[in-house]
Structures are given as structure tokens and as C-alpha cells.
Length: 319
Image 1 (cartoon, rainbow, N blue to C red):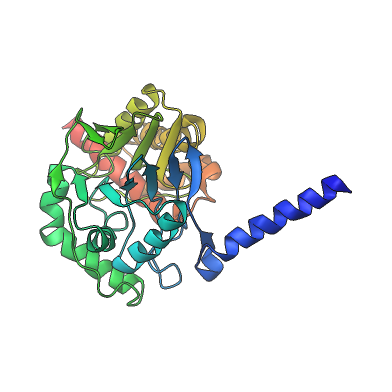
Image 2 (cartoon, helix red, strand yellow):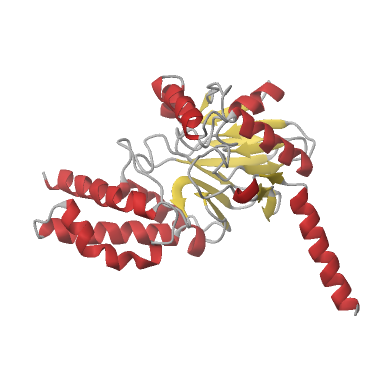
């Protein structure tokens, strides 16, 4: 009876916690969960930005220091940032001292606006090319895209870009928390940084890695570079890996599944290229070999594009 009582009590507290988390209806309830020492992650939905999820889809990170907080990729819009701040305040009422943005894609950084509005002295870090792009056409493109995809739910969002540039090997000290920057570009974009929290041996991968979700590779990306970045990340032997989308975990779950997918795409495209096949012919021939990934969000939309992107890279190397 005692054991049953505690089981019921624990289920009650779990349910109560969800009630007070950010409620996005069918998309789910979202809050920060502790993953490593003083590190918390708010795992977002795996769906594309839409009206139901208000554009929220990434994995904001939170590190608690003695006198403040550090945020990694706060989210996709001003309105999302306000909700993320509410969830942060359930963990700690300390001020946000610093923000790191992992790359140019707006679903990760447009919530900077809400952070900066509340904490005007916050320092926001990003790759130098991200800063340039965010303050140029790309920043405005992402603002407009989020408004369109969410059917207006993100209206009012303005570009607040990083102000402090970081590069490969830089170590940033924020209130006794140490962050090492790993930047191997181009990979997912030509603006990527992976942020290592040295104190806890946690690596924030940005969109260099996904799990249960397929990302896109735009004209600035390199799938071959992405493979190298993930192999490098595994070699760092971190305790915890945080993908841009999908669950946090060890390298076996948070890095290797997407890395193995990329390597497999490379292998089948290289074979098809050597056999003088076109990209669409390769896709038709090999899609049955990717059954393990068909349940991943965005597979049907992105698989053919991934074959095409890899084909173009391999073709370019053959010139």
C-alpha cells in the first residue's frame, strides 16, 4: 500500500508539473529539465514552425551560475522568448548574463529580442558571419518567414543579433562558467558554432545534429562538412550532447544516428555518381535502404533534397 501511495503521489506531481508548463495544446507541454549538473534543456516540438507551435521548435539551453544565467539559442520569435523566459524563471530568478546563438537560422535566435528587452546588459555571442547576416537580408528574411509560417503568431519580432563575435577555440568566461567555441564551417550553415560548457562537459551542437527530425541544407551548407563536424564532436568525448532538435543524450543517441545517416547518404550517392546515375535515379534506387529514418519528422520532404545536395558536393569534388 505504501509503495502504491508513492507511485500515485509521484504521478500526481508529474501531472501537476505539466499543468504549469508552457501549454501548446496538441504540440505538448514544454519546460526546462535538468540534464547535467547545472544545465537545463527545454526540448521543443519536432514539427516545422506553424500556427499551433507558435514557431517554437528548437532546444533552448540554460546554465545556472552563482550570480546569473546563460542561455543557448532562446528560440524563434519575440513571443516565444517571453514564454521561454517564464520557464527560465521557474528554475531561477537570477538575471540572464549571456546568450549564445549557434547559427543564422531564425528558429534559434529571434527570441534574443525578449531577452535583451528584459536584460539590457546581456551579452549575445555568435559567429562573426552570423552577425553580418543577421544584420543584413537574412535577418529580415527569417523574421518574415516566421510570420508567414505561423500565420501571424510571431508578429512584432525584430532582429536583435549577436554583438560579440566568437571563433574556433575561443574560451568565454561568464560568472565562473567556461564556454569553448568549436566552429567547423561550412557544415549545417556557414555560420555554425558548437558551444562546449567546459564545467559540465556538455556540447551544444546547434543544427549540426538532429534526432527524430530531418533538417535542411541551404546553399551555404556542406553535408560533407557536417560529417566532419560531428566526427569531431564525438572525438571531444563529452558527457552530454544537445542537438538542435530532438532529445539530449550521449553521443550514441544525440550524434551518431544523424551522423550515420549522413555517411550513408554520402556512400550511396558516391556509388550512384560513379555509376553515372543522376540524383533522382539514385533516390529511387536507394530509398529502401533508409527505412530506419522514414519515421523522422521531415524525411519525405528532405530526403530527395539531401541526395541532391550530396550529389552536387561530390560532383564539385570530381571537377
